[in-house]
Length: 217
Ligand code: 5GP
Image (cartoon, rainbow, N blue to C red; front, side):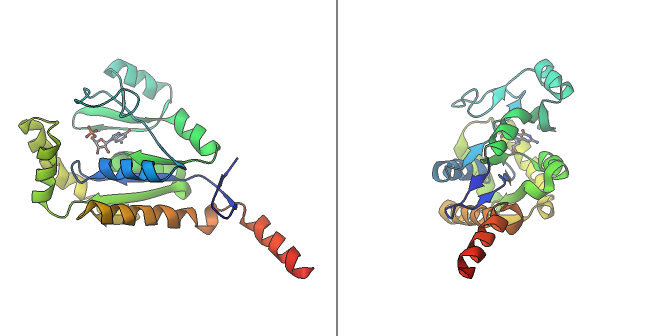
């Protein structure tokens, strides 16, 4: 089964990647997208990092120990994986393949390392969006407001942001999150436009043939 637009034309599902330095608002944008785009399903990653307050097993992450993670890598259960802030993060393969096969689009909140791996494996089906904070001060403020991490962790994330930002040119779209509603509208427009791309609309040939048949009558 393939996904269908409002017009009923079938298409392949797509892999929609959102990356950014932590604190740029990516999690909020992902939640907004999932709420408003029923055809989109979140890929829930596995990670060895400890659970943060408010996080839920199986919703935010699958929290696993290092040994379990390494077994998943060895068994080929992960579509991509990477070390981020000294912890391991990876995308379980089976749920993504299951979602795409029934025509759902899949949303990924993964870093640049994972994005590169996904792109190497399935470039035609991957749409890469990078979210930038409007300023360093804004990024720091958001990391503090989130109140989930210690000062040390926040400092580490700020330092790492410089490195993460350097990968901006590996993405198809760049959104500056000055205001969350505007950034959301931009991200949603990207998704809508990508869904209309001719190459992934497998039902178009048949659709146009039908149109021609009707015209010839
Ligand atoms: P956090 O610990 O703040 O939830 O995530 C830290 C970073 O890891 C974020 O940049 C996030 O995008 C990235 N990340 C989360 N899951 C995955 C994954 O499955 N693969 C990769 N490569 N990165 C991930």
